[in-house]
Each structure stands twice: as structure tokens, then as C-alpha cells.
Length: 173
Ligand code: ADP
Image (cartoon, rainbow, N blue to C red; front, side, top):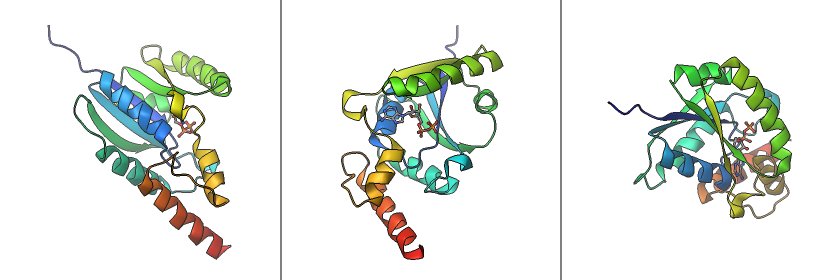
């Protein structure tokens, strides 16, 4: 019998991509044949980077991964319901990262609602690795805006982009 392709969607705002996101991407792509990273519009979160920029940042980060042992990784923007996006990608699962208990309430509720929308798509959680437990895009942005060192949370390319963006912002304010 032909083996069916294991496809998963990893959705998020990725504003910007942190080492925590990259860890989930690498680990997810090890167990999936195709991982589609879905970059959500999420205008409500008032992102620092536009949707196109966030897609470009994730793409850049992904190309720097060692592709040996990893499934195919794709990066796509989406502005629909997550379940609709997952269905359009023929995904069998949705991948999420779990940090501390604070993530749990939100993820628990979302997983329950999404399971009602499509019970055939499993929601899989990967625990954040020990070194990335505390990393959150929101905090990285706050630290960068106040001139703190963000090099242990994001890649050098992302750090550079953040500094450029924040310098520009402070000039225009
Ligand atoms: P969202 O707006 O959906 O919360 P994020 O970009 O903040 O989007 O996060 C996307 C996913 O990545 C979520 O499942 C989140 O829990 C996970 N994630 C974020 N930071 C980390 C981290 N440091 N370690 C593991 N998972 C993380």
C-alpha cells in the first residue's frame, strides 16, 4: 500500500521569527513529509513587520536550516480560518508549540474549538525546548525597543532587521 504523505500546518504570527519558532519548525519537519508554515495576517496584534515581511523573514530563516533529515518546508501567508487553510493544504495535523502554563489555557480552548470545526485534523503540541521556554516575540520586541541584547533569542539576520525597523520607528515618532 502506498504511504500517504504526512502534512502539517504550523500557524503563527511570527512577528518576528524567534529561536523558539525555529526549534518547533525543525522538530516538526523531522516527523512530517511536508510542513507548511502559515503566517497569519493578525492585524489585531499590531505587528511590527508587515505580512509580506514576516513571510520573507520566515523564508530566509528556513533556507538557513540543514535540510538533511527534514521534510519539505513551505512558507505561506493566510487570512482565512486556520482550519480552512489546513484543509486547503491537505494537512492531517496542526502543529503548535507549548511553553509555560500560560500558553495552555489559550491553546486548550483553541484546540477544542478547532476540533469541532474539523475533527479529522489533529492538533499536535511540541513542548518548547529547555533553552527556548522563555522566548516570546512580544518580549523580544520590548527588549529590542529598549536597547537590550536580543542575540540569544533570534538569529543575527532577524536581530539586524529588528534594529533597522526600530531605528526607523523612533525617527518617525
Ligand atoms: P500566535 O499569534 O499564534 O500565538 P506566535 O508567532 O506567537 O503566533 O506563535 C506561533 C506558535 O509558536 C504558537 O504555537 C506558540 O506557542 C509557538 N511558540 C512561540 N514561541 C515559542 C517558543 N519559544 N518555544 C516553542 N514554541 C513557541
